[in-house]
Image (cartoon, rainbow, N blue to C red; front, top):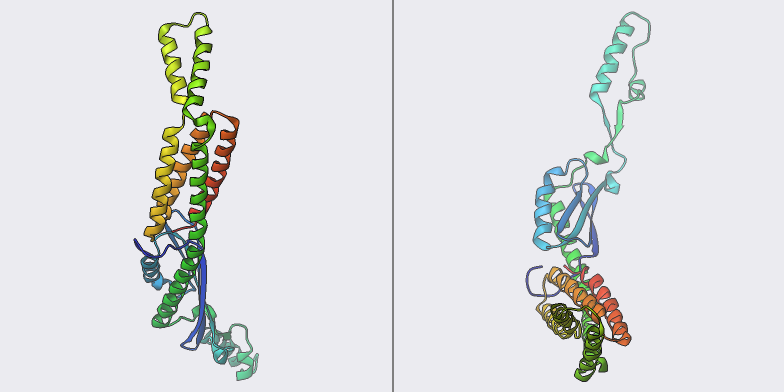
Length: 295
């Protein structure tokens, strides 16, 4: 999924079964969260030559996620139970028996006796069965497409949840911004009281007084943090509207939400503002968990 278009999740599953060349085979693909695109292939013996092409096709369809594609092969029912003669093993038995028969120690071997010897008759090895390349690639394409649809469906379910969490973050930000303890008179009164406490201290130099006053003024308000939260909310909404592979960018914004929220909590002027900040922090954490599912 490239820039723009629907948003997809990184989690999903798809599987198909096909028959070709007397073989029945199954191709399955699973996808879970991942920082980048991590492709893992589980192929039967004899199919290793297809690994590069399968990786290329998966890479063309997805940008992020841990994707595992598994191919399992078994003979079709009509061909099941086939056996073959191990001619090398049979030749070794005949050579040993002929020398004994020539000496008269044993009778000449019969066919039924030879075929009953260990290793002469072998069941067809399913691991040696190879799926025709064209059939395998067609099945892989079908599974990759189905996995993409599954991821898109999950993404469509997550987007409204994330949008609702953004609304909740913005609502809590507005509640903190409008709290009475953030009104200018309340801030002025708090600063006045704190300055009186500083002036009452003995031995406080004028330089130190100015430093303490600057610190108090900096901690008196969370205007900058609330403004940055508003900007980040707007950016997250724009990304949801943009679509495509926006999961990494939203995850970065989730970190910024968390940073600003921590500062708001540490500078909160009143316990009710702190409570709002903690509630905001909980919503931000839920937001982060959800966006980490997005491609």
